[in-house]
Image (cartoon, rainbow, N blue to C red; front, top):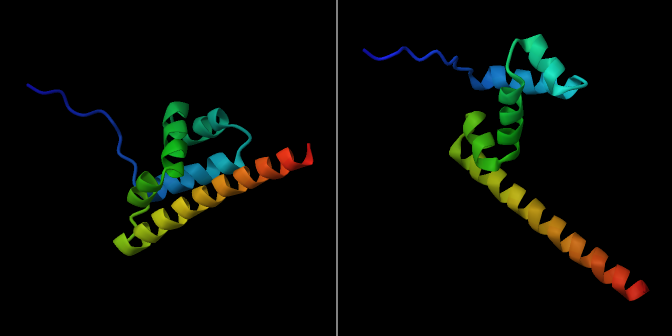
Length: 95
């Protein structure tokens, strides 16, 4: 006899609202208490929201929008790296 699954399932809309509450709150543990959730779960959702694949999967985006989101995030990372390289080059020239 198998044990029933005791884990609650949360839909994307609830997760989005919970992350909004966390953003407006002073701390994640306080928001977790207000939402009656484990703070570790909110931290996990925050981390997933920062990764493009999980964010696209969780937001139920259409494939074209998800692909564009991945491309834009990759471009943003690349430009941030280029900016850091330029800052270091300028700093070394000023010395």
